[in-house]
Length: 561
Image (cartoon, rainbow, N blue to C red; front, side):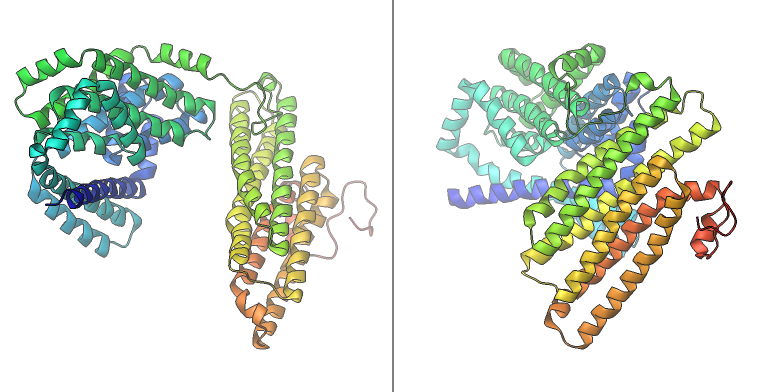
């Protein structure tokens, strides 16, 4: 076989291995993702249990990176304490090694069986869980098939003089071998794939014991880099967890490189099969790190806190949620309301930028919407957690009601952010990139509904802050007006379609989808009025649009509220 063809076959088999890993990961997440998250969040009462759940989650996901991202996200939200999160990571590392050991067993017939069963399950199943299971089983079959192909491709390499020269060079420079393996693990987003490749090369006699140890150590370090990069936007708490995991693996890799010769001799004496030596080395690497660093998880967390302290001031973080006020419910609720108004200001900016993108074909404005939306999610999460911690204190009935109002309004604002990003901004980008244009009448109608939505958001913020019943009624009535405008615009748009207007025909789906999204936004905006109108018994009347609203205390009969 020509060397170039052989190299292409090797790359193709490696790509198939990575694709199988991806199928397993996505299949398990779609079938059992919520369950796995629940296990991880609840299974952190002690370090041993946390490590066990980390290992089990990785066995299911076939990826310590996926476990690391979930754990880092929980740590960032305060759901899992930092020492327990580090324990989960140590268990996840061992889980990856166990997966490699399982996949190293030569059961070539299982590959065909898994592919057949996976395709059949995926094709027959209707529910998401069933299709996810089918996807995962298919991925396992593809991985086993890829391993068999890699073994066949690499078998002739043991007779290659060039390969022997390269491997001999790696044996003389174990640090270079480790860096090479780390780079491959980062590039492929999988240390497991690199370890399995090293196992196959060792079985074929291409890689000796010492270079194999260096490659395994480097693959473990590279496998910790990917999750560290993946949680870079989650905040310091998540980055500390993944940085701690990276530091632990680097310490282990340094120890392996220093002791490579005696460790290789020990493995060669105890185990004859070179491929099995690689798997045992991988298992031993993770097991020793688990035993050494599990008792030191607290110390490791404190060290990471020194290396990555909380930023003194963050433009993306909460500005008003003062922890020292939690013992004073009235003041704490006031600052939580102020932070919620700040979220409303960001939503207002997103609405204005989406309008600009939509009507002025400004792609930069649409991209700014996508940049702002994570800030909404971050602040809403902070507000909810702040209110949750406050609820542990002694609150009277009025404080409980206000806390619920703040949480409800913050959640509605978060939903608005999702609609603006995934609906309006996406529609604007689609319109810009396809070089589409609204009719002049359609653009004017959308602009009017958009402007009314922005005005209603400002009104909702005033209602939320001042709790004025008159403004609350006005806000609810504005929802009726939005419905009227939406129905009128849809009717006129259909009229333009019947008249054969080309602009209307090209943008019909976008126009109608935008009207629907703007209507949904106003439904979320109106929610700010509901607690106030419910409190005075006027919500039902407002919804029924009665001409005579209930008389307020001290209001002369016959005057308009």
